[in-house]
Image 1 (cartoon, rainbow, N blue to C red):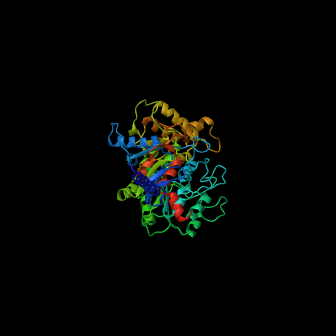
Image 2 (cartoon, one colour):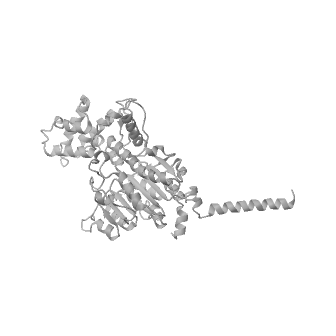
Image 3 (spheres, rainbow, N blue to C red):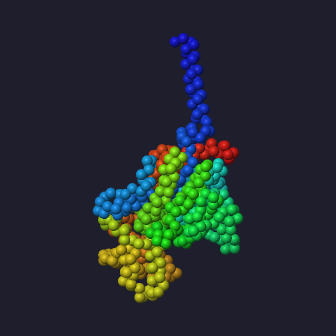
Length: 502
């Protein structure tokens, strides 16, 4: 080979290398983006990003819902009916521990998802010293031009939604969290209401006044919420029918009366956020967690199915804009230690036992409390409640063992809470919940072949499902903090922040 040909080859190689370097370092929308944790994404940034969080949802919660639906559509056959997000092409899994415990809470896990940082239980977007504040991805995306929406079925100031707009040393500071919601400037909040409308001493002004002063429209009737669109401006949409400050369980939602669902809020959120620059929406199904805390498998199953209905609204966006949409579905942690299997049913499950359940533990507890308020402890009899039990749970043929534990539970129910605190043994049996109600939930669960190991969270990993632009990054097994860095890489967050001067 001549010297000229050799130098020509070297120069050609250098040109190719220079072009590759240019592509890698270019801040263009299409190219390679790197997050600060080394996540690399080579592709187009999505305009529409959805992060769905099933609070307390892991594999058992998803699988039990699918088995229930399968058994309902094809009785007697072992054919689960997949939920829409289970059909996503990408499946991953994430660990959930926090800085001091393998069993985390929602504040620390939501902080991991929103900022990529581990912290203490109960702490939202601050470090373990509670002195350093972390910026959630929503804050940076908003500053870079995205619109932002936060939706939940539980109070809007609860730990998971709060982690996407607030920074506090303790999740219990709900009034302060509400003030930070008003100051966030985010475009849409929907679902549950505020846990603390007034300050701790009750002397401060209504937090909704802060919200209105910040330029938000507060929509709290069905008509106002259904009328929202992308000309509505910044909006806080509060469900007009609430269980405290949360939406009702799906089991208790009055569909005939048109009571709004989580899917309704996602649909409206999409309409409000619609704009040429794109948006980021976080949606939490918070009462999956609450149902599993109470060991109410039926309520958990129905809220998981309702969660899938909400995800369907995002899938409509994906089908219309498949190259501009990313949908991620995960849990923040597992709750209840739900297992598909019970010693009393061996290798069998009977999901038809779940079908007759007509109300959540919350609604049946109202029945029990009404009975308790109108009956003396000496005159209380389980037989008095049998008609109500059959209506709520579809059971009338209890075994001798079941009757014995129900009678013991009713006896404990009739003791005034001011008279005797639950013993350690009673806490293991009832978890601090209404004794008769939680015992009935256990009987239904066990008859179906389901069981719970705790009334608290567990340290189990959670599934991660993804579809759309950048979804491949969510394949594999990783930590929950990595979900933030994957989202940051896919949205090219570092480049957006640099361009916006952040």
